Image (cartoon, rainbow, N blue to C red; front, top):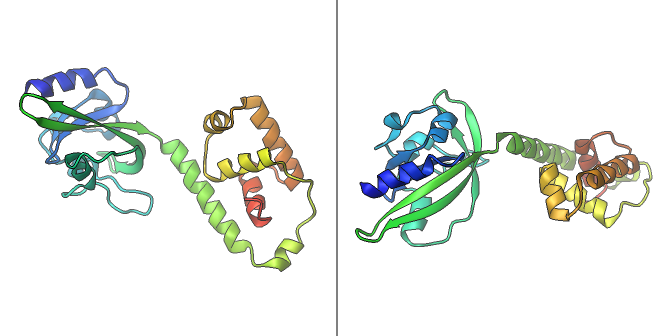
Length: 218
């Protein structure tokens, strides 16, 4: 119990929605940020199964959180767990996309372990990513073979760096993510996107990605 109290106090110091669950899947702590994200108070959820409260799903609607949680099983077997994205539901039934990271905390005296979940709201980024993926699928469906590709107007050569930018845009990456990955500034990225739009005869990032797919550039 002392460890749970210490965890609860510690997790109040993070801006991430955070809660600790026992390896049996029972919520033991629930911070203020989690209350803000989900709309449930700590009193409402402590003692309940985290699968019931969180109800996480991945992009295709496949459950991540259920009674026999694979995540907690990985914790029990000491397997490494990387960050992952999932969709959760608030108390009002509204969908929210979060990125989840885990921290395992153990009581050395009792050997009791807790899986501390940290959740960051990524709804805006994930919505843009899903929209881009949808546009990519539509573009691929529209590409009906050589005849359509041959009918496309000629373009200036797209540089390798511009292709990297297009590829990252196609993956739904945000401006900060792209500039960080490519090691360039925001103004340089804007120039690349402007050049790409000019070369591909497009007016937006999504149009540029669609045209790049049609032309087989990415």
